[in-house]
Length: 358
Length: 166
Figure 1 (cartoon, chains in turn cyan, red):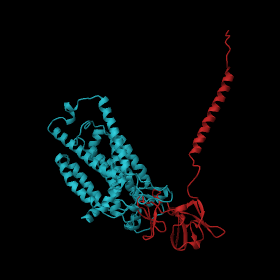
Figure 2 (tube, one colour):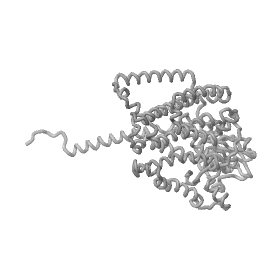
Figure 3 (spheres, each protein chain N blue to C red):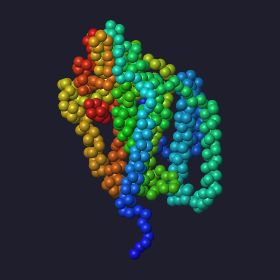
Figure 4 (cartoon, rainbow over the protein chains, first blue to last red):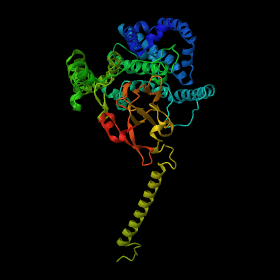
């Protein structure tokens, strides 16, 4: 059983499993978003978690001081995801019945003063947060390590927990892509949401059925591409950034046979059986063409489809192209990950001479 | 006819103004210089860029780690060539570990792997490790100069300064 879970936890398998679970959860949100489901899930998960915790290797990983916040984070994410789906399910049922959303009921529209209601709550939140942090700092000591040494790195060298998703992304990309362009676009894209998405539906109340595209786009990026990667980076990456299952001992010498190949090598050496052309652009032609097709030909094609037409109708051309570009850049991450797992593909465009790799 | 004595005439006003501006600019420039100087450390703990690395007979076939902690250099002797390999991963600049059993360098940050000769083969590293300039002094000592690097993908590993024949 433990072997099976170790085997399943490998990103090659756990990523599709997680994606399918995510799709099922979103599709059957009216089943997931019930109190009955939440209680059932909690009752089943408690013995499962206890059984997991009896394994010494798993216990070691989750009780490592750096990893405790992520365990808390997972529980909090589960709860808040369920909670929003629950509120969505309730409201969507009301909307189906021709009623107004819960938040629009007269008793929920009542207004209170900022002072003292909000300010007092904030004061208590500040005090509670401070006490929590002090107790935390007393119980879990911050590990003091030796002075920094430019010729030595700890193994595994892990980023702070909130950056572990980024670090996991970096395994599949060149640093300027996963370290600069993609996080930059994440921030820019999140800032741009209110300007791209001017649909007033869902403002001030929970709903799913009125905003499926927005919710799917955001939740996929958030849960599958960010939280999942943090979990993998935290719990399942050991020395040398090798993958270790949740019950696996962190053996420094675990051998993973891996040999990554660039797309240009696939094209010239494997498929065409010739040597690599000396001209750099010629050498990377296929990758450049594919990237160009993906980034510049796909958006107009999608625009001609029913999906694209409906978005353009609602938002206009400029908003559509910004939206679809951001979406395609986001989807490039899972595409690249799957290509790496299936074909050991290193880079689609590999121009190390120009420090440019995609 | 105005009896009021003007304190300053036009010419005096401009000369005072010039003095004031020059003083102000000089003070600002001085402050900026101080701030600029402050951003440079008084003591630099970074390894020396040039060092003498013994004689060629000191090295056995394979990877030698004796200069790794002090200078960030692996001496790799292979197929009659001795090279000074940089210990900075070409992916994001972490410090890989030499794994003698697996005969490879493995980066702890994102799992890039390199063969003993520095060629990348696994993980995200886009290009091989860099070689430093290596040469012999007249006294027969090896001298490694880290200010000059030789990159494989640019065809610089054939350069006579990128290795020494042993």
